[in-house]
Length: 188
Ligand SMILES: CC(C)(COP(=O)(O)OP(=O)(O)OC[C@H]1O[C@@H](n2cnc3c(N)ncnc32)[C@H](O)[C@@H]1OP(=O)(O)O)[C@@H](O)C(=O)NCCC(=O)NCCS
Image (tube, helix red, strand yellow):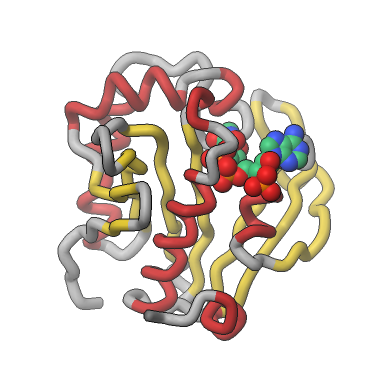
């Protein structure tokens, strides 16, 4: 697998850039909010000191070994970090799972959809993925709405497919093949 530099992506209102260690406190504050953490598979709640630093420190190796790309979602005008968007790349083939979170004060402004659309575009155009999938908790319709706005197709509910705090959770699966995304968002 060829090594590529960690990308920075630009959208109308956002810059998606690699995380740096000085983002750690902000990540801890925003991702460590219960309303964010508990809708995700992996963000701990409460969010211990040092976890954000360790997570950010893992990014370069994860990218170089073609396992994951995670970008900081920042507002172009102010530079404020408001969230994260990621693709977990599967070893078995050119597929990836999309993930994201946005800090509560920034919800419902279209930021997640804008960021995710840019990263999925990068995934299809630069990483040559065949398809992108995503899943959300049944009790998280806002995330499902983001997937719908990206043109992803709902594939149904996977009962008790997730686990958090030792509780089994129903998850809703979505996916989109590259061809469908190109039809909807053709390359410029
Ligand atoms: C899911 C999340 C990333 C969305 O971020 P965001 O920047 O607010 O997303 P957007 O503004 O692009 O889109 C949100 C959409 O959900 C809709 N929405 C919000 N709350 C909703 C609800 N309770 N029911 C249905 N739709 C809802 C919004 O109206 C908007 O849709 P619209 O543009 O058609 O009006 C954010 O809520 C979040 O970080 N949640 C916690 C972490 C998380 O869920 N991560 C994903 C795990 S799968």
